[in-house]
Every structure is written in C-alpha cells, then in structure tokens.
Length: 453
Ligand code: PFF
Ligand code: NA
Image (cartoon, rainbow, N blue to C red; front, side):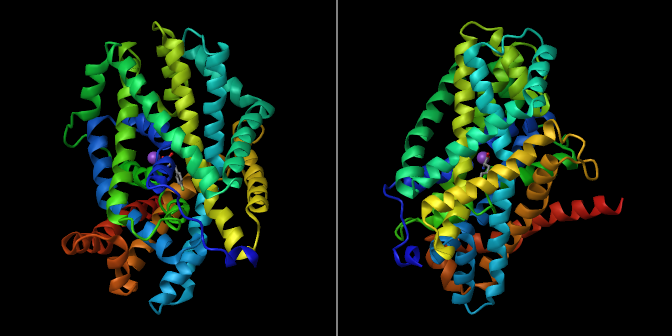
C-alpha cells in the first residue's frame, strides 16, 4: 500500500495542533448547546458542575487520547492496536478505536443537520428572512425550514460538501490552513458580539445568571447532562482528537497542550453565554428557550435592537464556522483510516467518506419532515444518533481509554508522552484510574436505573 510507505503528515506550524484541536472542540456544543442547557438547568450551578466535569473527567481522558494518537501514529484503529501491543497487551483493545471512529461518524451524521440550520440561518439573516416580530412567527420560520426535505437537505448537503472539500485537501493544506484563519476570525466575532451584548442593557443579568451559584439547585438530570456534555464539548472518544494527536510532533507537551485546548473550549462556551444571554435578558425573553434558543429567541432579540441585523449575521457566520471546524475533525478520523490501512488516496477516501456521511445525514435530516414518524421507543433517527453517542458511546470510549492508559500500559508510555513533571503525572494517574472512571460510571448507573423502571 503506497500511502503507508510515506511518513505520516505532521502539523506544519507551532500552533497547528492547538488551532485544529481547539477548532474541533469549539463548535455547536459551545455556542448552541451549552447556552440552552445552562438556560434549562438553571444557570450558575450547572455552569460550576460543568466546569468540574471538564477538569476532573474530561481533561484526563483528553490527555490519554492525544497520547494514544501520537504514540500510535495512526488512525484510531491502528493507534489503539499499536499502543496496546507495544505494552504486550491484546490487540483486541483496538475495538475501542473502531468504536470511537463509529461514534465520530454517528455524531457527524446529526451534527451536519444542525450545522445546516446555522448555514440556512446565516442565509436568512442576510436575505431578511428572520424579520418576524414574535417568537411564534419565528417558530413558524424554524418549522418551515425543517418541513421541506429538499430545503433542509440542501443545507446539510452543503455542509457535507464543504467539509469533504477541506479534508480532501489534506492535513496541512486543508485542515491547518482553514483553521488558521477561521479560529481567530471566530474569536474576533465573539468579542464583537459580547461588546454588543455589553451595550444592550442585559449584561449584568446575564453575568449574574451564568456565575451565581445557588447550592442544591441542580437536578440529577442536570448533573448527567453536564457530564455527558463534557465529553461532547471536548470532542472526546470520537476519534477526532486522537487523529489530530497523531499529527503532533514529538516535542510538544501533551499535558500543557490539553490544558490549553480545554481552557479555550471553556472560555468560548462562557463567552457565548455572555454574548447570547444579555440580548435575551435585555428583551425580557426566557433563558430556558431549549434547542430553539439561538434559532428563535435570539433572532427576535436581535431584530428589536439597533444594528441588530448586522450582529445577527455575525452570529450565524460565527456559528457556521465553529460547526465546520468541528465537522472536519470528525471525518478526519475515518479518512485517515482509509488512507493508512486501506491504501486509499486522500481524495478517494474523502469522496467515499462523504458519500456515506451524506446518506446517514440525509436520513437524520428526514427526522424533521418525512421521517418524523419513523420512531423507535419514541425517538426519531436523529434523536437516536444523539442519545447513543452522548449517553453510551462517548462515555464508554472515554472509560476504556482512561482505564487502558491508567492500568494496562507500561508505566513509561504515558509518562513519556504526557511530558508532565512527576507530581502532575501522579495527579493525572490518580484521575485517570479513579476519578474520571467514577464520574463516567455515574452516567451508566443512571442509564441502567432508567431501564429497570
Ligand atoms: N466538540 C464539538 C462541539 O462542542 O460542538 C463537537 C464534537 C466535535 C464532538 C468532534 C465530537 C467530535 F469528535
Ligand atoms: Na465544544
């Protein structure tokens, strides 16, 4: 196989991995999901628990995942197999690589549908399609956008196409080049939006909502959601971060880089809250707007304000770019596997991956129109993709990853890879062996209890 004779690609610039991994982490999870979850679960206390989940559960998993990628120098399947066999363990553990690749693909299948919403709303805000006066009218706009499969399919197909074009161009010329302007652009837009929010008159309320903790006000459902979201928002156990890690040069410190990516992801989520909630509060709207928060409440609020349309365009542009830098990370795992192990050229690998993705995402898209009644246990195909990945595959993959890294590998492997001092390494080991797995088991304990009801 010609392609495996070539040395594996590496990030070109010093910031290549940081930008790409932050691009993967920062996405719809931060700007669409985090704000509405915070709204639903009551604000500050949810935020605090979420921050703890990131630090105690997410960060140890992320360090292990990047280390597996760099040590194994390959797609998730190959990297897992190489790393465990190097320590004399069974190659069977590469099943985790398969699982994470599958998980990334399933997430992607519904992710591009939501990314399609963002793109279509960017178009609507440019063409005046969001100038409705009431939340009811905007709910109608949202429903109409979903009701026509050709319309919705057009937007999710567009997202798929752009994603495949970027990935098809390769690690340096496609992924690294695109994130190196999209990520700074995204941060700039977010800062502008916060500035707009600061002048809206709702900033104080938003700040208090996000950062005042009232003990005991978090439901167990909220705790579970925070835990599951920690995986999703950091792009864990979905092959993406591992594959990006496989392009990481030897001299980078995985420990420090992980902390930087997790911090950046968290800061962007909080910034998104500080951009969205002031506008919501200034217009007396409900922060618990659910998944429709940014697609219904926010446009209404923007429309009521001077220069609102301009900032609305900026918002949906930012959301679309954030989604794109995440979706490319999810396909890269599969594309790199096809190139490494199956001898595909990058172009054919992208085309094949794109085709399968297109079929699955089209099926997910149909959950909002033709296939709204195709349900199993009350869930549509779209719902199933979300539920299976965030409640089962991601936690399971994360659990496997930290347990292998913490117990099965030779001691020297993770110590060499992480590049932490002896104290911090011991801290990581403690978290990987006990704290992180315990947190994950909470998710499963709850799932199983649900099944026995
Ligand atoms: N971290 C992304 C977000 O917060 O939107 C979502 C994501 C990207 C999940 C890549 C999984 C993944 F592999
Ligand atoms: Na995120």
